[in-house]
Image (cartoon, rainbow, N blue to C red; front, side, top):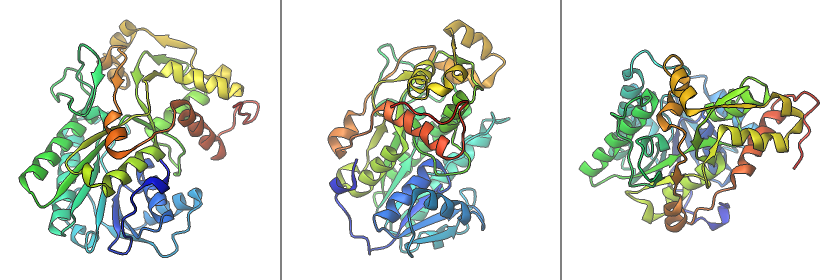
Length: 359
C-alpha cells in the first residue's frame, strides 16, 4: 500500500495519461502520481475543467510543480486523442459514464462506455503505449448470482441477467469489448481493475455515489435502508492497485478485484458510523427493509433494483489474486468508512452537536 514497496519505473520516459481525472479515483490517481514525481497528463472533456483537477490537488496538499498538463479529449469523439497520447508511457483509463438518474434507454450508458473504452485503447495502441490499465467494476463480476456466493476474477456478470441495471450492463459490455480488442492485437497489453464500492476521502466538490451514501446517512436522508451486502474498498487502495498494475509485468492480461475484506450491509455501515460519530446517531438509518419489501418497492423505485437483484445474499469476494500477484494490502473496512465521514466533515458537513469523532 505504501509507495516504498512499488517497483518504481523511470519517470522521465513520458507522462502517464489519466482519463476521468475529475472523478474520485481519477483525482486520487493524479495526486498520487504527481506526489511521486510522475509527469501526468489529464484528459478533460472541454476547456475549463482543469480548474476542478487543480482544486482537488490543493485539497490533497499536492503541488503540481510543473509535472501536470492537460489535453482536451472526449470519450465520444476521436478528436484530441492522438495529441493526448503523444509521447505517453502509461495509461490509466478511469473515465466512464455514470448516471445521476436511471437513463431512459440502456444505450445511453452502454454505447459511450463501450465505445469510449475502445477509443482509448485503440488510440493508445496507435501511439505505441505498451499497456492500458482500465477501471471496470465489480458490477462486471458478481451480479449474476452463484449458488455458493463466492466470486473471483474468473466470474462474469451475464448482461442478460433479469433486472440487471443499465450501469452494470454497460460495465460488462465495455470490459468485454476491451478484452476482445486486446486479444485481437498483440501489440497492446490490457489490465483491468474491478473495484467494489469505492469509499474514502473525497477531493472534489461533488461526492461520488458511494461517498454520497455516507453523507446521506449522516444527514438523516436515509432513515430506512434496503437489505443489501456489498464489498468496500478505499479509493487510495484502488489507486495503489492501479499503479501496481501499471508497473508490474505480471499484471499484463489480468483482471484484479479490488475489495478490502468481508462484505457489509448498509445497516452495518450505519453501525460503524454510529459508533464513531455518536453525534449523528439519531440521524442514521434505524430500519432495514426485508428482501420481500425490497423486491416489491423496486417495482416502482429504480434506485432499489440493485438491492433487488442481489436478494439479500452475502457475496464472498476474493482479493487473493491482487494480494499474491501484486503484493496489494488494502485498508480495513472500518478505517475506510470513518475516513469517508471525516473527509465530509472537513469539507463542511456539520453534525447536530458538532463534528465529534470517537475513535
